[in-house]
Amino acid sequence: SQTIHQWPATLVQPVGSPLSLECTVEGTSNPNLYWYRQAAGRGLQLLFYSVGIGQISSEVPQNLSASRPQDRQFILSSKKLLLSDSGFYLCAWSGIAGEYEQYFGPGTRLTVT
Amino acid sequence: AQSVTQPDIHITVSEGASLELRCNYSYGATPYLFWYVQSPGQGLQLLLKYFSGDTLVQGIKGFEAEFKRSQSSFNLRKPSVHWSDAAEYFCAVVDPYNAGNMLTFGGGTRLMVKP
Image 1 (cartoon, rainbow over the protein chains, first blue to last red):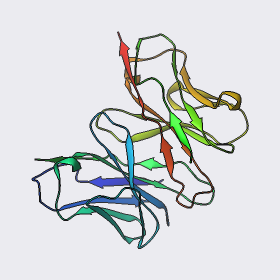
Image 2: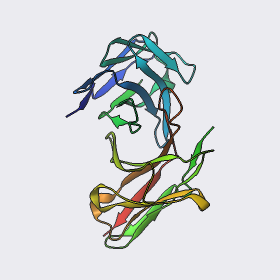
Image 3: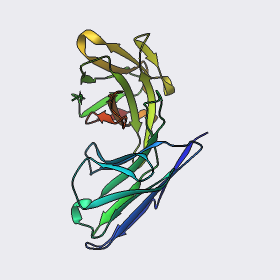
């Protein structure tokens, strides 16, 4: 069966510091991968998605970036965090060829101080 | 572009009472629809999905949803709510012709359950 991991689970970082959040998927190959953010009390905002290694599409311009160095690894980064980057970050994956539902990881709670 | 509206931001029901969460979508063709549930501090869990066929779909945890094309709705129901159902619920639609299979989510409905 497929599983999705995210780490760290929680993170407290000062403004201006770098960020690296990691997401890995097991039990499937060539998944579509997604990064979402939930600000407090808000809905889900799609940040990035990837349909293959090295292929990243950005949905919202910001100081975040994403990379997919391996088939089942998706990384969210920032060089300098802003207070507004605080939130709950969710990674998700979906299959291809007719499988449209997305499966979510447990999330990372990021607090920028 | 597709859109999803969940008109109720908060709903409170008594334990044991029935539940209906509303979802309206805007999409040019037959939509692929989903309901997800999120407990506090957790990721989203898929409750059920509709692609085609029978318009009444059954999901996990005793939930069901009915697709009504004429009303552009996909409402989630449960006949008897349990305290553990308190969570946030998201309706979503996917455009199957989009290369990234991206979901469009509604704003969510937070369900509170009174003892």
